Image (cartoon, rainbow, N blue to C red):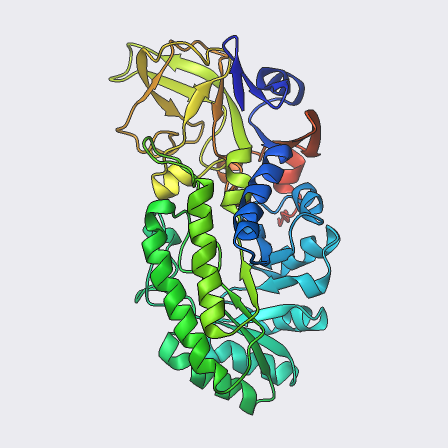
Length: 420
């Protein structure tokens, strides 16, 4: 992303031209930036001589075009549902390079996953039992809850005492014994304790890695393991003052993992980045439709998107920088509520409805870009208020291509049944 002559560019493309061609609201993903992010991560592990297996966390952005693009750039896919498995297979990933980690799998789900020979990181004794009832001698992993949480918001912290995820370390050996007794083979341990953490949280991650190590050591007395999976969660800076991982900090992260697998005497290490790969590669383009200046207690810029399109501010109180695309260098001289188009009081692109955003002097039809929107944007979208979901565009080698059509009215009602 660059700014030239007051205009915002992605690669060599002026984003205003993308909005003109494809309409708004619009998600745009710079796949060239995704490659840069992957290389940055791989470079940290290469520097310390550790071959890492990167399983992209599809829940961050499950676009078929993105998955196909990643096919030869990552080692596999971490899926959170059977349909994420299905789209990964359609994108060209081999079933041997897909794993599923989720607390809820129905019998129908398990039958599908096991028929496709997908590795399942079992989340509970109940899942282990249900897997064994379908097919004995199946290979599985076990998900650990390290009883430590990490992450930028309580909703995306998945470790700790009050978590629905994983098996506590002291019960993992029991889980391995249960699995073995039912004919299953546990080949690895998985741990994901939370998302969107930054370099300042490395000391917490080190504690989590130690729990993984000690649990693996105990497990090794009963069963030789193939892999340790350290989950994802590497974040990107969002709020003012936050900073990206430096290459040196990523090397520190890699060293923690290297020490863990060395101490546990396990050869294969896996990680599951999602947001780190695609988050800063995406923007949401939205247009100012109405300006209210003077007739309301505050100045309000109403745009043509809402939290049905991008829900992170609404759900997490997340800060995302907003740029006026054709006034990108202009001084921030006025405070606005950036309001969405939904009939809901909390539908704002600010952190909350009391926080205003400093912007250049806005006019109707100004194009705004919500930055760092590549992860958990479209993936969490809905059709609330019967508002259609937007189109998506990719940029590869500075060429823009439509990768998802904008929904229309027929898309909104196609599965409804009119009963008289």
